[in-house]
Every structure is written in structure tokens, then in C-alpha cells.
Length: 396
Image (cartoon, rainbow, N blue to C red):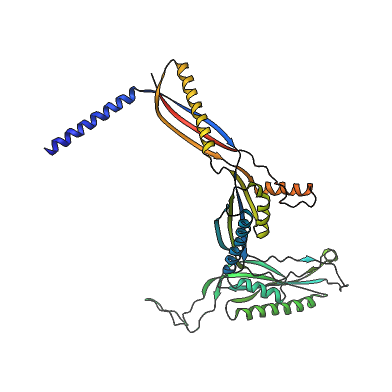
């Protein structure tokens, strides 16, 4: 019995659905969209500022950012009063890497120097198992007398053979000797250039060898037994008189600063207030308290119901007029509205920070010794409000 009742109900539902589809197919409609705009004098403004902090320590960075933010917030509340709503947003915090950047500086000769007609050039190669010691190697090599940094990269290095390794024996033959084989490993390579000059080839060579020995010793001591230091290449060349005349004297570049991690924090502070006349003073106290940038000033409405109502009424009238015109032109009559929807949007007036600062700067220039808070650098325009009404009319 229950099965029969369920089948009957299912049949009735299908029949009702078919009747509904038939009715929909027989209904004639037209769709129209109407648009309406309204405007009003703004009575609310929102100021957006950026506060940043920078430090070598994560704790110090967050402390500085928090302290500066509190100063900016307190300054804004003191200027705008209890009616202002001050909030923070868009907080970001993270590390970054700073690098040193030392450059050679040309200087004039202070005292006459003896003519140098021979120049020695050589390269000390440093090999390390990891990249971490490279910055220390650069600093140590330049401090010991290296003049430049040459090519660097990754290179396969043959390690020393272990003479105590046991022999290797297979099923058909056995190895003679210790059975140890050279081991190849990939190491990080850095080249440091060494230069000296002398009045003769022998003089330049003696100076160059002594300098290379000093640089190599400093690097080996710094490594403490890890990695390898080798002589890459060296040579002596005679300089022509023209090369002597054209060569510039440079101060040796200072040792490059080792890279180190720093921390940056940033937060946005927004203040919402109905006191539009305090725009200039609010910007001044926030920037004085530590804000680094005024992002923008947005003018809006505290209560947009009146502007919204006006825009919707205009959009509805526009949609109705379009429907009536369309029905008349097609020789049909409007019977009623089947569907109706609306979409509204307020369009605040926004002044960006750079525009405000440029206007404030021009006013200060035109008024000698006039403080920034005396005039309002920008005059807020009317706030716009737009509405769209979508209507589906049944026609006959």
C-alpha cells in the first residue's frame, strides 16, 4: 500500500512539473536594466598611514614597530578625540639579507713614485666544502693583501689517497698495492687576485711571491685545516711606457662587508573621523609621531541611506521608462513584474598620499612660514552613489 501511495505522489509531482514548464514556455517577458546616480556632501573621512621598522634583531624590530605604532595611534586619538575610530591592519614581518658594496676610488698621486715597468699577477685559489666560509675567506684574503676577487664556482677536486686502505680482491683477480683509489669530491672555489709592481722582473717576482705566501698563509690559518688553498696561476709582464702613462692609481677597496640578516616590519594605521576640518593637523601629528607615509584619504558618508534611496528610485524609474518605451514600440502591454533585483555601490572620493603631499607643499610655498595645519590642502568633493535595477516584465 505504501509503495502504491509513493508512486501516486511521484506521478502527481511529475505532472505538476510538466504543467509549470508549459506555463513558463507560454509566458512572454522582456528584461530591462535601469541605472541611477546620486551624490552627497561627505561627512566622514578615513586616513591611512604606514609605519615601518628596521633592525638587526627580530625582537628589536617588533619592539620598534610596536612603539612607533602606539605613538602614531596616541597622536591621532589626541587630535581627533573619542569620536575617531583608529585601527591597525596589513601587518607584515620578515627577514631580508643586506650585502656590503665596496668600490675602489681613484685618487691623485701625493708623492712621485719610482717608475714601475714590471708587474706581477697571480691568483690564489680557495676550496671549501660549503659556501658558508666564503665571505670570511674574501675578507681575510683582501685584508692580507689580495687586490681583487676572480672567478668562483663549483669544481671537482681529487682528494689525497689513503695509503692504509686495504687491497681490493675480486673473483678473478686481485689488486696490487694498497687498493686505494683517488676520491673526487665537488668543492666550492674562489679565486683571489694578487698584484705587485717592481723595477725589474726579478723585483716584481720576489714581491709577488712574498705577497702570495702571505695571503695563502692567512687563508690557511682562517680555515683551520678545512678545505684547500692552492696557487692557481702567476706571471710577470713588462709594461710599456704608454701603459704606465695611462694607468690610474687606486686606493685599495675596503674589505666587503659580510652579508647579514636584518628584519623589517610594516603595519597600516587607519583613522576614521567625522571631523573633516582636522585633515591637515591629523596628517601632521601622525607623520611627526613616526608614520613614514600617508597612503590615502577617503571621504565617505556616515549614513548612506538617503543617497542609496535616491539612486534606487532613479534606477527604478529608468527601468520602468525603458520597459514602457520598449512595450509601446513593439505593440504589447506590460502585465506585471516577474523578477526584480538591484545592485548599489557607493563611490567614495579618494585623495592619494602623494597628491595630498604635493598640494600641501605648494600651499606652504605660496604662504611663507604657513604651517601645514593652517589650510586644508584638498577640498573634499561630493561622494557618488550608483544603483542598477534589473527587472523582468510579463507582457501580453
